[in-house]
Image 1: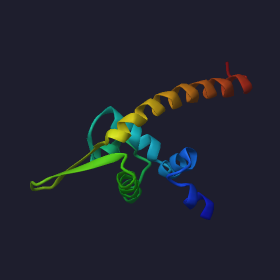
Image 2 (image 1 turned 180 degrees about the vertical axis):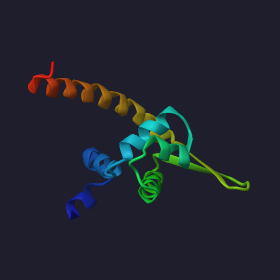
Image 3 (image 1 turned 90 degrees about the horizontal axis):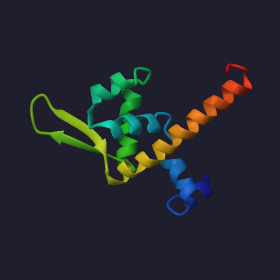
Length: 115
């Protein structure tokens, strides 16, 4: 654990692993990559995610600088979440993950004789 702290911000793999360590981080980034969303919209996209977990994940992603939270001064308060500049760059990684994920799914199907 100490070595991980020492490598954060130095090693690209350790840094990426730390930033994306939340169970739902990648899915949240995927949905925000499609459009700016309010909390309720995100929650509807991820129905298995509790409100408190979504809040924690959003705060962590905001702390790491991958998303931005915009608060509009109105009643009732309106808050929107969107990808930051560095978060937008992650969309390329998501596209590659989708390609790899689909290839892996096909491999599983072949292995298990589903095809």
